[in-house]
Length: 104
Image (cartoon, rainbow, N blue to C red; front, side):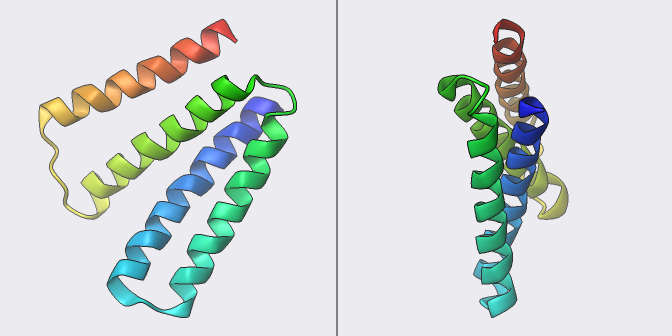
């Protein structure tokens, strides 16, 4: 259950990135609510998962999901570069997250 909570924490982190982008574009109250709500839910899920998982592992996976998700959202929704080197480094972050899961 802790790993599922950690995955949700990372997904809420991605939603927060979308909220940040919306704040930058529109600067409306709904965008601030989206961002704030997603961050709060992300921290709640992260906190829950850290009851069972080591803090270092949980934090690394959480930030990895947010980093990779944010980069992919930028690439596929907002037209950011899809250069092969960028994809390589995203794959490296994913490999590190899988490695942490395997040893935890």
